[in-house]
Image (cartoon, rainbow, N blue to C red; front, side, top):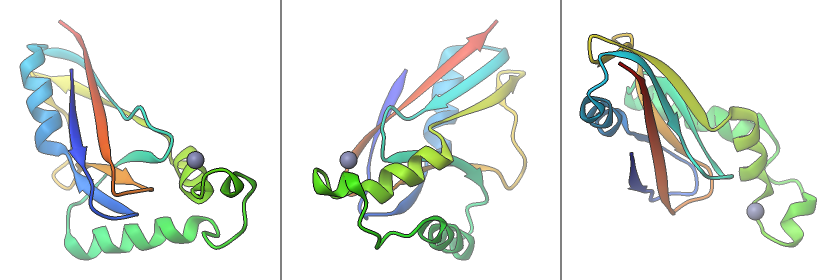
Length: 131
Ligand code: ZN
């Protein structure tokens, strides 16, 4: 099960909670685990609150994790080493419990795709395992 998201900026957080909830519901799994995965080397996922100021703060913090202006070796063949490195540091999958057919998450926990080399069209894979 997967869906696609089109991003608009080089670095951007896109709330994909609704799409993930839809995939979990479609799975028919009542009790189990949902794995959300991005099959990309320059995108990642995170869970946090979807509040405009905080989303901007997280986007800013992501750009400060490493030095984006440094001349990396990978930039000689493909000018996006900082995107790859940041993605490598943040990981590309999330695992969440499913109970009573619902994703278990806190009130302020939304699921975000983190674009690190946009704009691009991204694929998100949702695998739900259980009974
Ligand atoms: Zn690259």
